[in-house]
Length: 286
Image 1 (cartoon, rainbow, N blue to C red):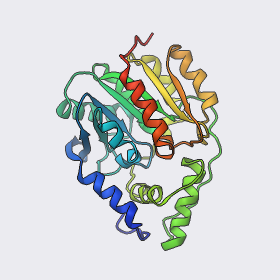
Image 2: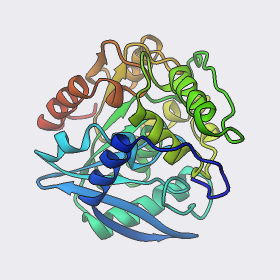
Image 3: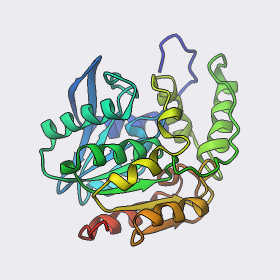
């Protein structure tokens, strides 16, 4: 969040929730072109790496980390140009993938791992799996765009010049216009406020119209997907056939009563589905 931007007064409970989860994380940095990539880790067991969506950070997974960490070592990365991470050498997938691959090798090792990417993070991880196949055990896509399908209508309001309750109301409206199906609580607003102004990467051109569809045929690892029933930018109906055309035996699950930010809005159902996917041995991709 830019120090020059007027901020809303954080809700005490939401602020404490975020602070507690971050306090319990192991924090690590690996080199990137303009500074570090920042990684956080919780739990123990086989590693799973999480990547957030555009204008997000590790906190996109704030309602999932503890449940996943009961069975896994959960790694959450701030993608280059987001959160606490510097930009990659170039604003393209090859440079982003190279920086991520170097960090994974340094922190987690060179054995293949499970990759879970939300929205832009799914597209970034698909490129990572294609460019560095030795690191990808499986790929799970969460509400990703870039499949060449029409983008649903989203309604967004400018927030940078607002303060106080007006700013909070604008964040709530934007969350309901893009990310969530029903309600935007104080935690959702706090995460949005934390992340949106720290994003220095315009991800639109790295996703749309069909960056994911173009790279998936080059991904050797098996992939599965989880979607929110009411995902506004990328409704699940048109996405499933595109994904199945490349890997017909994939597992595609839709979480009821959830929007784009499915893992935040319906964490119980999402965590159960994701852990079940992760518990199965990776199948052959093709």
